[in-house]
Image (cartoon, rainbow, N blue to C red):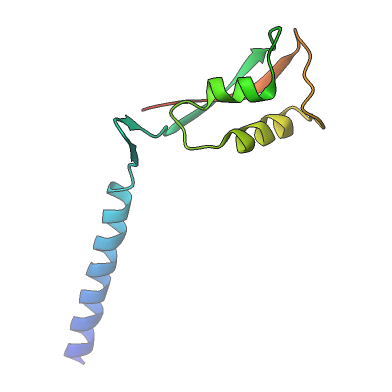
Length: 99
């Protein structure tokens, strides 16, 4: 019975160590810049010449999200059924920053 207790204790300690290591070592580096860890939503007024693609390229800095995924999220959050946007209207968009 003591061996079983010993091995169970060792397994639990190793598992705890693995989980804690994963938590503390999850910071991802991309060159010299850290990937964003904070996402905030803002109201953005559409300017003349803006497209969803240009807005995405401007606001995905410091993140690992793709332009397509960002555009899909903007469309979902603003109930857009197409990529057409109108100057002067407002969109709810995500911005990313390093902590």
